[in-house]
Image (tube, rainbow, N blue to C red):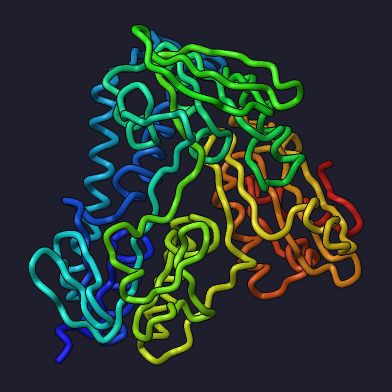
Length: 462
């Protein structure tokens, strides 16, 4: 007889949400986690600690750049790096303890240790084999590196090491101009570090709307980040002073070097399935290391499912959470669903950047006739009042039906504003539906409405 109806492997956002939802649906559930704390990469060394540092350094930026303008006078604060890291850790601890409480509340058993799957219906943790009617693999991902760049988490670090450097470096090279690289680069630039971002492609934020990427780069450059684009990194070597990074410019194959105290490798992440024994059990894998699943997150082995970073799709905590809830519903005999066309993405720089749906580039490539409604935050009274008038809201709608196809925001609170559009898209709304909805004044959200108005007869304040 199985010990559990479901064993979830991994207690990150996908895993712990799956476990809790399955327990709420009446299943006997266990979740395997080898870390000392629950929450996975996101809560421990990813989303949450990085947001704490982004918040702290944003406040520092405000003190130095805007306080006197607002009539707030006085001595400017100094940075106590150890106390800032302690604040970050307090935020992490509060969140991870919260997941532990939710497990107890919902009667989810925490199996402490690292899991393997010796056979279908079995999960081994330590020396004990537990029976399970169903298994969900939510093992997450780990940072990926480059040939010739050996991470030591001291001078050549991933995001994990960058969150807890012993001191604020005078200089840092960030390899990769994606979300992690730009967020952590912003943190250290605000702390006074000379930051250079080296990116292989000719634009930052790969896959994002081109107009958004160009504006964000200009804004971040004003904030002190330097960019070297179209650069192929060859190697990184430790020196007495730090690290020497060698790269070639793709446009002319010219060789260059740059030295810094710290190099942050932010070149993406790869699925983490080591030690699970998937091949021996017969779980089919994809060429890039992901687990192959069907439309219901089932693998090639009956009773074994997979979600989150371990499968295809964007490596986002909220995508994993959605899949976790959906697969729990499927296992409980219900109809789980994830709308992959309405998964937002956010970069938590200042200003924030958020997007959902299609970009202009994607619509052009697909031959879709569309219209653009755009509104600058310069026309938004509240944004101007808080020194965040850079940026815009861009709404994309079908030219014939007016149905919303995508939205891209650079501006204050973009990570929250985008969800109004997500809900609208989930219900198949038209731009006019947003335009006719009353928005409170003065709020940032008025910029979304103005962009929707711009899809029709025109914005009012532009």
